[in-house]
Length: 185
Length: 297
Image (cartoon, rainbow over all chains, first blue to last red):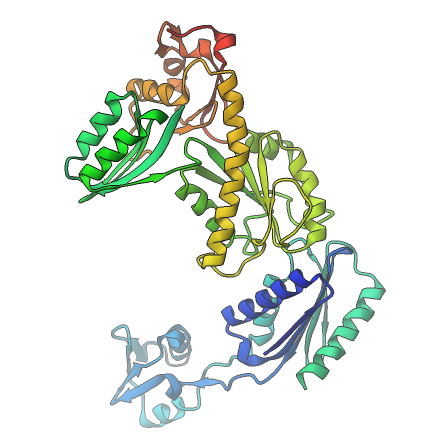
């Protein structure tokens, strides 16, 4: 992930580079983002962040996170356990039971068990945008509550300020957006 | 003048240290025994320090100077949101506590932003109840310069902690600013130490003022007298908080009269103190100077 911050003084740019880096690392998005371009103008209180989205991880299927043991499933990645249980209960009801923390018993036919492999437990693409927006929200100074999002094919650009957002800043955001996509390419 | 230090060591004969402190007219401010470990905050006359050091050495314990002990400091942040909590706000508060201060944290209701940042009259009154305040701001020079106007309203000594290393503002400590990581590296700790040193300077000025016009009785002595009348209840934490010129007493309303009637020498507590209900917690006791209240003994 490439991070570039401009517009502020040297100290502010450097520290916000670190903030961007840390926030996206904490939210687990570093590998899904190609580049982040931030523009800060504290004097007029306008901040622009443009994020170029890269590859999204492939969906997690039932066999990616469980091992079959006869008519039981052993969970190997507990992180997805609540989602898996919700999915199985929704589909098969009481025929699926959680008999211990990591073991699920199945009263299913062989055909149904074979179909399990195609079931998607979690698709990271579903909530990628909302996770990126959450990350952007954490980076912007808290006072900049007036937002103007500008979605594009490559990613998301958001303008934030404490004042009404004027046309001039939308133009600036487009510049930042194009610079971001050039930088990431 | 009293010196306040922290003793840490084993439980072996630590009662002897307590007796020594009491013999020389000192006070035990806090005491915590954790199985085989003890921690005590001791206040004693400055000139008796060698005696206390010798005793601590004899018991194999350690003494640490607490330069901010006996003060209550408010850590003020623009909001209690994820942008300011937990770093650096909690790091700053923890560091001040390690140096002996009692800290409170306050997130302003409308403190965020640059043009829109405000402080209410109630917030100002609560900050003014403490001995000092530290305002924790962010990384932009322009915003800190604008927000300095908020701090100017405050009557107690204050420090502004911000990001840019060199800003031409009074009581400013740079290099802190917005953080996403705990301040536990050497450079960060140096910054926090710099901030503590700045606090010591502003608080020493206040201490000198009090020394020139001495109080009717020391807050340490009044604390002990209140504790004798109203012993702390089980599970109650720090019911009496020391200030430089008074105390914050966290008591129920029905106990107010009992506190007012406590005898300090020949006088009642209500005669040598201004007692008022705090806007934040408990009651505030402002001890009058001896010149105003007259002699206590």
